[in-house]
Length: 453
Ligand code: ARG
Image 1 (tube, rainbow, N blue to C red):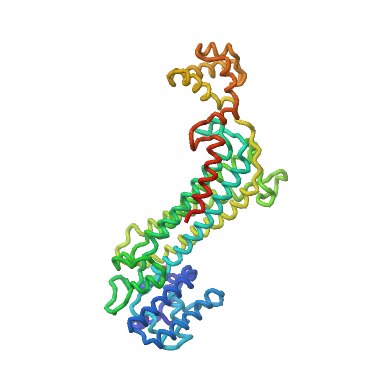
Image 2 (tube, rainbow, N blue to C red; image 1 turned 180 degrees about the vertical axis):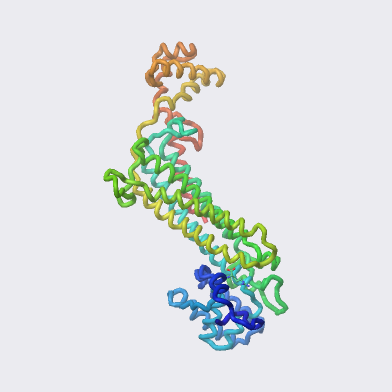
């Protein structure tokens, strides 16, 4: 077994050590690792640590490896301790001993930090894309259902009538912020760790600014220990995933509820639902259930990353190798959930029953407020009316002029007309509130926010 570090050892690594410490997870960073190495080699050539000829040989070798990585033909072997060792091993196979100059002025510690940032910046852009698409799908769904009126709930009790579109757009706003979070972390990620070496820098005349520019980073690290020892940006990225998953989980929970026969609000397409092996009548919203279930794993990934760092002395410790598993899992879970839930939602047909007339109680109180009655008195008057109706087994739309008069003399007979759920939505005046106009404004605003760079 050849390692990058065998010089001071008299015995080869035990199988047990190898199996326990080798990380196949970071193989996913292969192309990023080669891209980082290409910038490093270009820099070594520029500052004279490699001759122009050597730099060119290494560049060509690395380009071959990059092709292999992108075509999926690169072969890892058991002896590869990690992705960095694999690239160096393959480079020496391709170009001979000059390949051994690749690691000049570098450590796997700054190398893995570069690889992760390259991965994260690209992955963040992909999540921005996916979240944008998902948000726009919600906006279209809202637009297709602008006329549908449902109750908004508080305490899971019907509160006021609103357009269903208003409820759907609440999620579109959450998704727009999830998208923005990935845009913001992408900016913070644009700091190059290359040149930090093992943790203290190097005596060689490296040019980290050149490397940063080659790799498209805005600036270079300000402290080499921080550059190789910190993982807060990985945590932040996974938090972005976790928060987005929690939003999707919350949406999923509602979709599951709405698809129940008790709610009867929505039917999903056959292609996006599953059946029961035992109960022939069943049509189950499994995608939403799994989205809700998998958000637990992403919250776990975030928690694991925080715990991973909490007691670590500076700078690099091998513990940090474990961050990849959580990062990749969180990233993949969000990507897959957006796709599956997006498909299921776009097949949704909404057919909710109308909200209960009780949801217009506030409209009656506000009629009194418009006549100068203090809100607290108006609230009490409607409360009295409600108690009277409930006491005689009636609904709010069963109220008569006598009921109004008995509750408060300041009611007028015309107030009976306020007990209409659609009318309540039409009277709603608050901008951003649950009105048809507000929904139209939100659709325009969200189309902009969800496509903004
Ligand atoms: N595979 C390691 C990781 O993922 C990178 C190499 C760390 N450096 C070391 N000296 N073992 O964090």
